[in-house]
Amino acid sequence: MGKLLSLIIGKEEKPVQAIPLEHAALCINCETVFDMTERACPVCCSEVYLNVGIAFGDEETRSRIRQLAVTA
Ligand SMILES: [Zn+2]
Image (cartoon, rainbow, N blue to C red; front, side):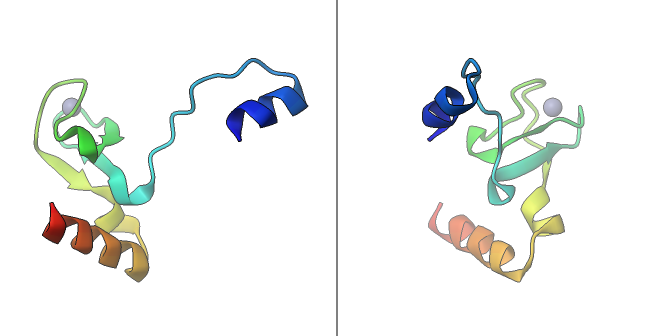
């Protein structure tokens, strides 16, 4: 999809840096947003973070996050 879109609009493909809300974490230490499947902040290695999806997601997103927490 990304490659096809790049061909259509004639731009070089760049890696997409997008984090789904249910995987988004905000590091409390250095205020970096990262994918929480990394388990720790990739910048400062802190494991103390705010779950952004719980804070800002709708009820459906929160429900999916709780489900992920149960199965993890
Ligand atoms: Zn950090």
